[in-house]
Length: 372
Image (tube, rainbow, N blue to C red; front, side, top):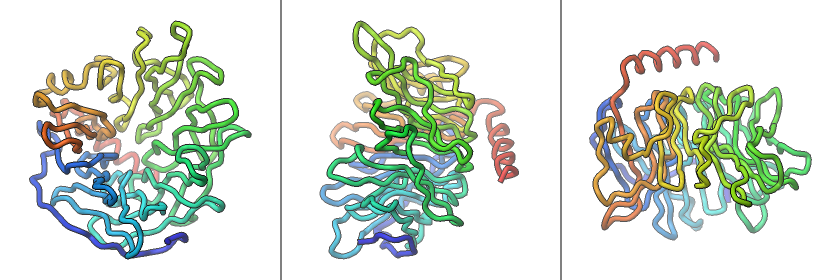
């Protein structure tokens, strides 16, 4: 069992050559039966996820040159490896290794990986997000018989190793990580305490702090599911009272903590955000009527219709399940779908780049590098 931080080696189980889609082209593609896509690099050229074929699971990274598999675990251990995040530059995949679960960082396309260690007192964990250059990794560790119950978020750096992030409340028992800014200095997710669970944001200056909810109280939970790479916007859901019970509303929070509902009509259908682009202007999520894409210019729109309006047709019978990642410029969308006769697969949709967006992203990346 791998427990301490350090460098280990892993077998690259295979490589399948694929035709790479042009980043600013107009495409729909799906691949790998039984696969979940979890994250995209900043330009959308690298996608990572997990392929499950019980009892074995392997991480995958799809790059311009093909699909690289992350596996196999050590002889005698259950065959389990997964990617949950990728660095913005597409060089590092982060995730989990071995059935018990050791957080890892892998230089994609090589057989080397770093074990990031575990918080003292915890016996398993996930790495879920990486900074733009991969030098900062975040995730969470757990203990006990149940997942998503007794755990704590962490932040790992090349210079300082593993740092526990604590909880948003003094009675906290659990924090996870669903998003991290490109510089690694803002981390978001869910924090559980005696008063229920709620969205939180962590920074080095403030520690873990609860985000404001639409309705305060134990029965009105919230959760953050992502953060824009520039750290300006956090996305997720918050609950409100509807006909005597709580309902989830898709929301985003500004850096100042102001909450904004993406569907202010409050129709009573549950809705939440699942992913966000680099500056928070394009957001994807789920509502009671299916998947949506929200933009500052158009508001919320059915995802299939949104893709269609940009020249990409989703074939009949192909059911989009979730959109888990968006490129920084808002032109590449990744997630999961069901394919007739094949079941669960990962998908990528690439829409044309709006006029001027490429120049905007180049300027944003240059500014980000200057901040480092």
